[in-house]
Image 1 (cartoon, one colour):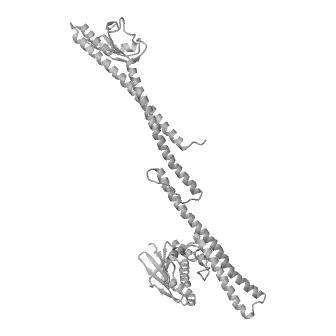
Image 2 (cartoon, rainbow, N blue to C red):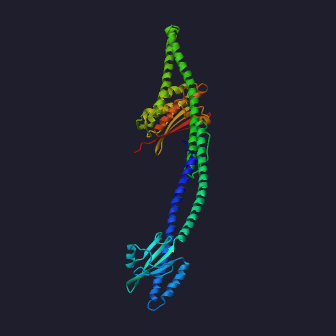
Length: 472
């Protein structure tokens, strides 16, 4: 069975309020009742002691009867009756009774004789009506000679208590009504906020990632709204990235088909030509060289994809060591000199002999070759400078060229996995997949390093890498 949160809130609030009011009402009622009866008992006891004290003073010739009558008139106005009795429980003087006093229990009579006062808050059996009474012993020269009984009807006390309870009941009803109203308002307010989040969640589930809801730090619901907004923002960014990657993936598949079809067609044509003797004997060596070149190209493209997947899935383990940087840069220069000569480029190494770098040798070489090849591809009749410097806590490597440069709006996109694939048919005559720089950034990050790029259109590009030193 579904119960709305609003009704759950109201039920919980009302239950707590009712229970709290019931407990407070019972406690207060008990307190008032005890207070009223204790005041009545204190009054009866005080009057009884005063009567006995005045009787003792008038004993020996004084007007005892006058004292008793005066107290009788005073107590009559207070709706209190009293009786003076002797040691045989026979009434000597009374404002309302004649004959023996009420039947006392043995325990009560023994208390009177021993000098104790007997107090009964409510008695409905031994009087014609319910009363509160007090029995005080009367001693003369240390000898028990009787006592005094003071009684007051409880009707007035009960009426007073009932009136207090009625006021209390009315107060509880008013307070309960106000509490219910406030509870309803607060519950509606909180339910409205939760409903807003639920509706926003439904919109997000339907694909709307632009939704934002009011948030605050006032309470947990406000903080939840803030967290929800942050989640939606991240989802929005993620979905944009997914959409961008999906577009790139589609373009990549098209480029893969294009890039692989060309060398495969060339290789297939050469083999078929040699098999059927369609290629003259003098051209066969040239055809075999072309097939070999296209085969190496295919291997390179496949290896780039394999490297990227290994790095992305953390399957690459770095074996770091301290390496003399000039040695690495000289090897890179030797490997790429032939490629640079084809573009009339000069490779310049600028590094001191005492500069060392803490890195994995193979992966560092892969990083530098990828960037240097990229610089050569887009530089003609220019220079590629391999520069190394030692910092306080790092080793810095710069690869700078004087090539065509990169547009500023395209600069941050070069690290994307399929970035070049999108441009391969129009701006990249080499037809690469665009995995090189993505692999470079992944490898630099695995070294806990940083890589930056600065470029100006028509003036060249500079890659700057920072590798932390070995911790001592």
